[in-house]
Length: 126
Image (cartoon, rainbow, N blue to C red):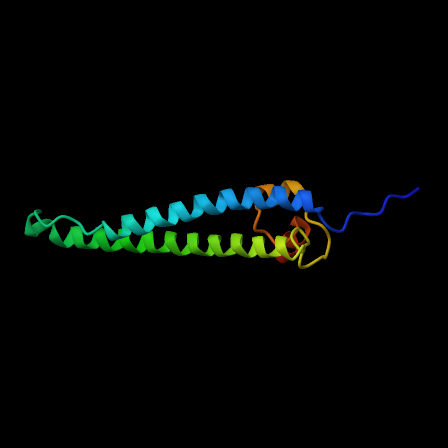
């Protein structure tokens, strides 16, 4: 007897994925908070000599830009994780948006916010 290919994850499996995502989400929000705090505290020092003031200002600006970029990426990651939680609630989590096939558990554990299988992802770059 031929076994039919699985097309969705069970409620128990979805709960396992949800726990992984919630842990990553908590960690990501904590990192974002740290980034925002470090961005607010990177104002440079006022007691340096005027010769170094221009370099200090340049370094401070560059640091703030880098922190801002990292914070922006972190916000996007948090959004993606939150969307993954919605897909779990809707029971559409783990289904590739391109192929319609089930994304392997190993991929979802490594990249829990993904919406594409490796097959679909690799086709993007061809």
